[in-house]
Length: 229
Image (cartoon, rainbow, N blue to C red; front, side, top):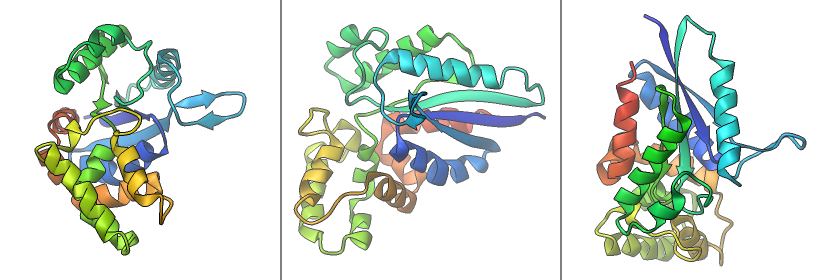
């Protein structure tokens, strides 16, 4: 049986660290080997991280597909880990999807059109509702391990999850109320919030199974990945 390799194209360092340190060991149990790549921002400057346009995504995916096209001893699959928050408006059918009020139908519509545009049977699109930090909201108490003086601030954040029926994926995506913005706002008076470090640490403590139980869209994606082997 050929080896199953899953390439995850990540929006930035936060997603990359999560995929490398939390998702990778989990999927290893399913005989799926994870390899991560961060979006290229500038080839000239050799910089990565941050999504500027759909064209940038398309170029990076084509590069990944090309790199592994002739490796017959392995089976390569490809997925993404992008945020719905601040998704570039040139994404396939973005304007139509934006009119959909239900966040789950919206992100599923975007992913479907994304898959149609890429048009490759080994590609599994994933766009995080609404932002990676929704997963951090699944285990806010673990932030106190690194930030023990932030008990009140963590309690404030926990109240936000309750306002969304304990579904972190529904925490919305305006520049003021996106999940990461809410965390940063609570922390800024005392600490610099290290998104990549804390994101991987908290989600690692929570574990993939618990993340799946609290985040339906994330669950659907991970279960697709589990079945690749």
